[in-house]
Amino acid sequence: MRCAPQPFDWAPAEGQRHASTDARPGSGYPTGFVVATLCGYQLRADNTEPAWRWETCATCKAKARKLSQAPAVGAR
Image (cartoon, rainbow, N blue to C red):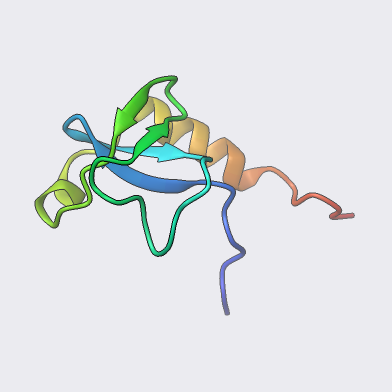
């Protein structure tokens, strides 16, 4: 069973993994790409292997969880 697409994507930046609803170019936010995060900051993505092991921003995690539990647009 496939999961429904989420209205956000993850981007490591500033020492944590953050969520963003910004349009994602290609397969991910490239290193240096500025994203607006769900915690309210404009941060430069760090799309490197070590960065994906950083802790998740608690605020982004909570807001992403709420977004993922919201009914899909047009759902009945």
